[in-house]
Length: 250
Image (cartoon, rainbow, N blue to C red; front, side, top):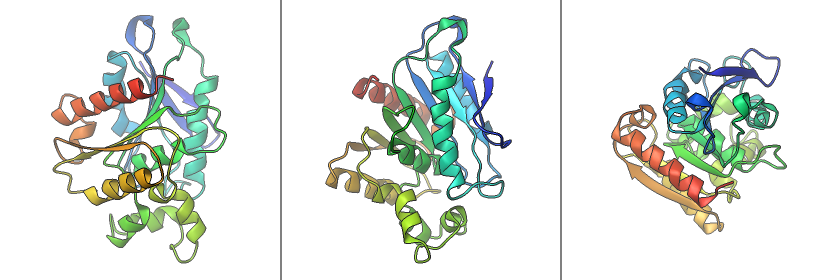
């Protein structure tokens, strides 16, 4: 069963930790950051099936909730929550003496992919990430805004236009914050009609140009197959997590 923990006083500052059954040692920790274009309509319920599947495969799964646009989130609250939520790993108890050893990998879907890559570049984190697996992440905020994705979701999230506060956009945008110090696996569904492939392509190009480690992988399915255990798309996510753990074992 998931174990709920809090990392702040706001009702949205919590997460759920699911450990492998039987007290078996964990192979590493996956921090699940759900998507939903940063809007409060969507919650960590999107990550619960992923957490259950990952725990059954030997991972400790931290399914993270955070303040979002519409319930106290946006700039800078959402970013503070992601950092604090990940850092909470350092203070969590270790039930059954399992020990949360091994790599810490952020797994972010859609808007969660943007937050996962941002988290990899944080300064002086208490818990550093060892890799990121982005699932059709919104990795180029300026281009996403130009395309009008989800009725202006980026500006709604950041609370200001790019001309009004360019420094805010610069700090939040993965494609303009390269390189991050860990490998980034940018997965994108071949049939994804929700987040354009070009956002992942532009991020990977920028990361390579800056000397970073980033890999684009086209995987089966649409925007949601990759968060649906049992599908071919989810199998590719599992493969990417294995590769991420091997690339940086923690």
